[in-house]
Amino acid sequence: MDSHQRLMLEVVEESFEDAGIDPHTLKSDCGVFVGIGAMDYAINVIEAHHTNPYTITGISHCVTANRISYAFDLQGPSYTVDTACASSLTAIHLACTHIWNRECKVAVVGGCNTILIPEITIGFSVLGVLSPEGRCCPFSDNAKGYVRSEGWGSVILKPLTTALADDDHIYSVIKGSAIAANGFSGSLTMPLREAQEYVMHEAYNRFNLSKSLVDYVEAHGTGTPVGDPVEAAAIGSVFGSIRKETLKIGSGKSNFGHNEYAAGITAVIKTCLMLSKRFLCPTINYNYPNQNIDFKGLNLEVQTTRAPFLPNKLYRIGVNSFGFSGSVAHLVLEESPHRDYKTNRQCGWSFGGESEGEQILIPLSAKSKEAVDDLARKWLSFQHEGDALGVVAWQAMRRKHHDYRMVITAKSGTEFEQSLNTYFSRESIDSIIVGSSSTKQSKICMLFPGQGQQWISMGTQLYATEGIFREVISKCDAIFRNLSGWSIVNDAGIFLTKAPSKTATKIPVNSGTMIDEIEVCQPAILFLQIGLFHLLKHWGVKPHAVIGHSLGEVAAAYACGGMKMRKQL
View 1 (cartoon, rainbow, N blue to C red):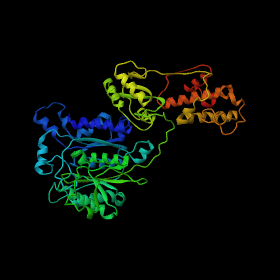
View 2 (cartoon, helix red, strand yellow):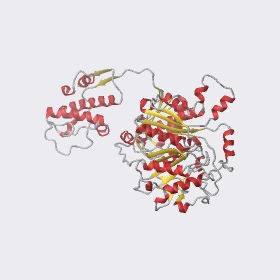
View 3 (cartoon, rainbow, N blue to C red):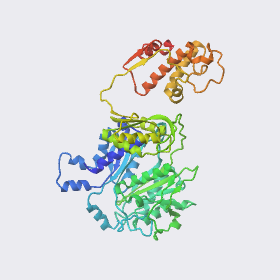
View 4 (cartoon, rainbow, N blue to C red):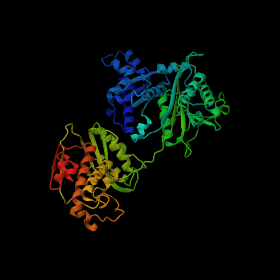
């Protein structure tokens, strides 16, 4: 199998993990679009005469996208794109088009480039585009060409409204895109300023976007003596001429080299991270301005330092990508809408921190015991300044749980690390449980006990944090209030973290021992049991059988469908 296929499977898996999406739930809603073109592996295999039944699928570029669809059971549009160095940015444009046309709701977009044989490098060297010094220096006076590099990357695209509704982590928003070609010009491989200007204008004009609001352009910036002046002139003509402030430009090829078919996805990931982290990254290897570029006249400046974004300003960045065969592409990215994440509950400690708080469960899973151990070792050095419960909640609720599992209990970052170190030293430890899930689904029986289980804070945390539980309690309480004339929640204050604001005069009990009075505790226990039943059902825990004792017989009758909610109350 071509390493393109294997490594793209890995980065796509990581993208789904990062997005908190189980790909096996997407089916026909998800398309796959991959920029690819290098033929190194196929040339090697054919020349070595290693032909077998898997050779064709192993070397065909189209299979790179289709194998991703096959592995994750994605049934939407799936194909590869080859426009040379513009391949992965072209793939993003096509993926957006499919989403806008409602041919898929989610898209996996990636790009890959593998270097396995020297002949291609020799060809580019003869063409005169490679740096003899092994350094890429975009827009600099010492620019002599680029450095070839390998790369594999992928992103997940969704409509903004869907991503907001799903409470996804949004790195950035695609505001517009365009693709085109040079057409006939002085040379097939020579960049053309007019074509670059055209595709940039199209990306903004087609979507009614103001070019004056662009704060930075992530340029193709290969560091070639011909390419940089042409691209800088095009960027300056489109953006610099309509701005008062100098437009900052830069290129990730000074950092990563030119990973060719993956160059576009590399630039997009860099830009998304800049927008998410809210600062511009420096372009390195920049010495003095290229004398063939009129930076002052074009109103451009190369970004050479780390620059934080200004507060209360929404940043917009353009991304350029051009292929040596004449393809051109431009993408417009913008910061995601600001959202205030309000958590109803925190545990009071963080990974890598020393503070101590509430004990929580940290679930890890993988496809083998060795993989679980490897994952746990990575968590040993994991640090995050946010509350640990927020991190664990994402891990538990937004990622697929594999068959081999480990659960660690901890109440501080220090205790978490100590527990894992003890585990890896082969010592027995109660705070870590390791096992595997059974392929045979166990049958579940729910037992509903009788009176006597009540306590003052019963159900308050679930009522405050779980919408399903709170909704069921409210329905029960509404029926009970119509029958009795008073409310378990609002008058008795059961399930509330604070006492009712008004003195309840309708409750036929002494408020000092309210939860233990039969008029209060029996309906409260029933409410709790029904609420727990619906919450567990919402989480996918459904009973095969139910048992009730005493008062719990009423909830059991409801759980098995033998009694309606109003009837039992």
